[in-house]
Image 1 (spheres, rainbow, N blue to C red):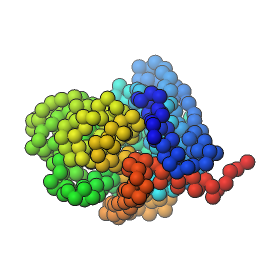
Image 2: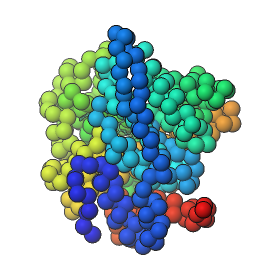
Image 3: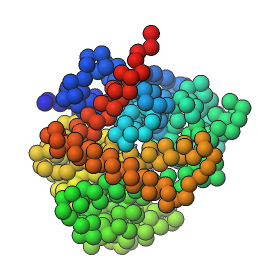
Length: 422
Ligand code: NAD
């Protein structure tokens, strides 16, 4: 079936193209197709903030609620200079499908503010966060729409979101946001959750291909929350991490990297990743994707693997940590190469799964031990992986389309049961 995105690098069109293929295979009724294709709500907010210099700046922010059919909207807030409404729309739709793939009772949402957090002071960031949250206070809520961290945001920013929302509603409301610090109702295991989910999926795929993780090499692009945690956990599980990269560049070393030392170098010593002294060949952050490895984990950003370069991939398993690292036009090339795909809406769903656990714990006011969180996460990820792969094998589609079909089917069934109001 032909891919229908017009502009390969427009992530919204890439997301739509996969939706389109899956919806056709599912023979989705026309009305349901239209209902699920479009977001439920979109808002643009203009966020006035006094900078430390006294100058008044106005930042543009978005929040898109794609679907609240299976539960409240759920999705991160991204602070980055290149945020666009189309990108936020795509990310919101992916959240709907992701929550449905792992069968947790959330819909999909996403938010973003066009800003460069690296150029803002801590107090400026706090003001941007608080005013953005205040503008959205009617939209957000534990039963409406629950943000979380994404690129450029972290647990401190989530704490400010929680505090601002709480001030507006007049009571401490921890469950309005996830990815919070532990002291404010965060969950054990949340920081590692996306990386752990990736590792659980990679392990399952390795087993399926009759390999052993102790014999496998891996390349990880991105060394932020997702990439660093995935690298640490995979290293601990026995994978030899031969390639790493962040925005400053990539490093390849066939002997493998000492990942805890690299983590210390980047996070405790604050040094640039490509200058890690243990050696390795330096290259661009994108070039690392094409080095030979068993498991490739793109965990940085969108549109890294395209129709132009997908033929250069040299991995057995592509385990997607970032949202949308592969364009829709690259999908057929990857399929032809016989690469086993763990699509983003499955691979990186560990983060939202533990966010769901955090929301449950906040609402219960009762907190779980880290091993309980990790055990429950393992159950969810393994079961979801098996469902996607079984579906793909039974219906002769690739894993990505199988994940979309499972997800769309779950949302469509819920929608039919609810019926259409008015
Ligand atoms: P982050 O901001 O913590 O880290 C991003 C990392 O990618 C940094 O190391 C940065 O240097 C690197 N990077 C950015 N642009 C790059 C480029 N062009 N080439 C190479 N490296 C580049 O963000 P994060 O939370 O780790 O998120 C990474 C991806 O994972 C995003 O696509 C995000 O939407 C997705 N994701 C995150 C979570 C989560 O729990 N944080 C959950 C699901 C999906």
